[in-house]
Length: 604
Image (cartoon, rainbow, N blue to C red):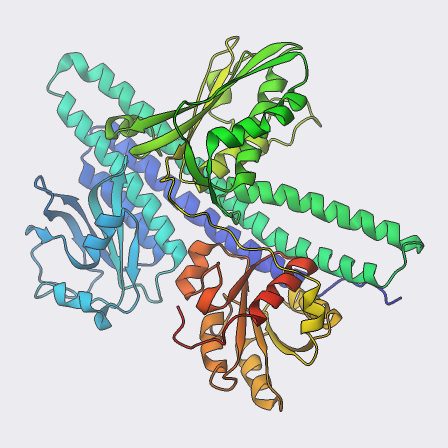
């Protein structure tokens, strides 16, 4: 048999990963430094404008925006009152003391509660809303000052030398939330300074909110780091799995190497399971949400959970009497319940009691103001309570951190509750924990209450075996900038009988298409690449190959790839394959893509 050799490209992948992590760590350090400096200013009696300037300067340094401002929402909620304005050295004759109407792209940020940007501002219709004498803007980014679901102001950034990226949006949004919390502190202090008897309560509230903010920033930073590591490590595991599967097809089960390769495949799959848990913590795991009744789903798991807990632990189930429709990935619910039950079991010595219950709750703005990360609305609450040993305050502050565990060495990965946290956040929910030493623990998970008429979401499974027959006479143009994945995917496609034209860059793909004398039936391309993105490449190629079908692939999440005009559910815009993938997933998606209508340059 051919030797299974180490593939090229791992050095470049590692270097790229190191660069990304270095940028994330630098942004994290700047954010934390600005946060603590702003908090110190407020605690020492400084005003919000001074503290906000520190956060704004950090946002400029992280995103590269040269000019901008911070403004607060007026009392009537109709205008922005500019706190300060930085023109970045460019001419600007706008009087910053005048109110700024909330319209254009600013209004979009206020309405959505999210950061937005326009990288070609002078060509957009928003330019008509600029006041006379305003500094010339090439690109703009607006991040809301949002706390408890309420937007109380806006931070604007502009004139970055390049384009604002999705990372810039994310960092600006985090800093905007930080500024909103600092504003909340300042307003609390101003309201309470007039009452000497309430000063102590204000300080305690301020310290509590500061601790919540620091913890939220810490979880966000750890989540980004974990997600970045898991994403790139999963790509490497995908290559390992692919080559092992190729090698297995060349051996008989009686071959001495067959058993060794099976062990390698098992180890790779176990490693992939761990990275999936990290992705769940970082809220980057690809989900397939479905609409179902939470009561029915939990009821169907009781038998399995009782076996998991053992005979010495009494499991009690109290379902809500009303319907509890939720829209989440069913496998996510399995992971949440299993991890919570295992955690509860390990906290009880020999015997104990565990109670699972559901209820419908409504969360208002007042509650959100006291609980960081919560938003108002109607929710289904899933509560898991145990009679175990409980936890002290120091432990509670760390339980959702990945790899943190109170168990003996070798008896826990420290990913169970981190996985729960990531899944709940990914599904737009919240988690609240109450525990005291010696009095057990209660985990309350809140999922948004859904309309029972909503439709379920999820891809249909395809028949892999039909791909081999469909491969006869078909030519596939494969475009992937990662050499190891390009080589592995080419080998898998050739195994099924396809003729493969492999390109490591979009320009090379265009050249191959021009030189190929026959038809190209399918384009399989990465979404995010140098030179041009996958969708732009497809638009160019369709002019040369009118009947071309498209299969896009990426290791990035839907939030990133949607910015490139690619959807993760196929349709008129082509099909989508999430990395990492094995030969079966590739086979099914290729068949699905070949059954799609030809790509249209104007497809959305």
